[in-house]
Amino acid sequence: MKHFARLSISVLFATLVLGFTLQTAMAQDVVQVAPQQYKVLLENERVRVLEYQSKPGEKAGMHVHPASVFYALSPAKFTFTSPDGKTAEAEVKAGQVIWQDPVTHTTENVGTTNAHALVIELKK
Image (cartoon, rainbow, N blue to C red; front, side):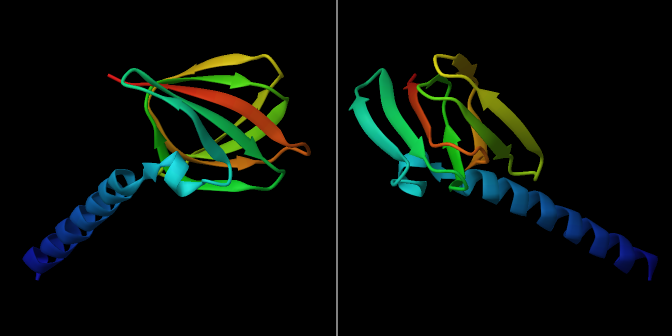
């Protein structure tokens, strides 16, 4: 009976780990996830430049960004949620520039104004 309980716990743990891994792996390119918010302005073998626009309350589902630079064209307030469910809020001012390591997250405009930014994604 103890062996069955241990086996059940092991299977449950493996299932949770696999689910988390698959959720992260299944995160898609942000332009595919939220084409109404992200528009490709330029893409070549070195960079991809995206224009981002969202209205208050709009969300972008789970997506990935490679290493990138975020340039705020307007003030905005966001909530980011990582695949493990942790959330973080960020508020930016117009003209603010932020470096971002590769990341997987959802994004929500939780401010009261439209958000407008450029995202410069670096390629290898």
